[in-house]
Image: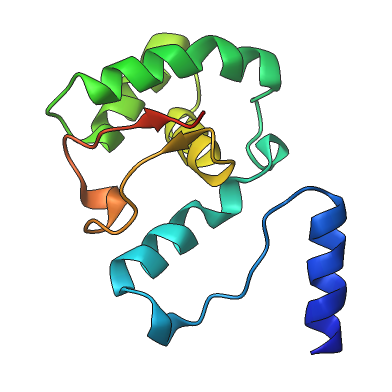
Length: 124
């Protein structure tokens, strides 16, 4: 418990929302989706991305996903080609935006990785 308290205070000082999630208390889809986006909090985790190029492409990604019936993974792969990124970069950006609560979507739906026609919202 002391380690959790130290961790809580650390993240509180950094201004990062922190909490303990117990699998039994949450729907399986939510747990899967949170686990799936977890590794994308920091842009430095994906080589070739920086705040400037992410700021440039995020409106295109947002609009493309919200206006298409296609799988958002296929949309991201197509945008990777359009922008000359390594495959998976735009998908990482989507996960980064969700992890950092810049964008939101229904995390209780079936596994996001399998979704078509997901709707993203900008968090105010």
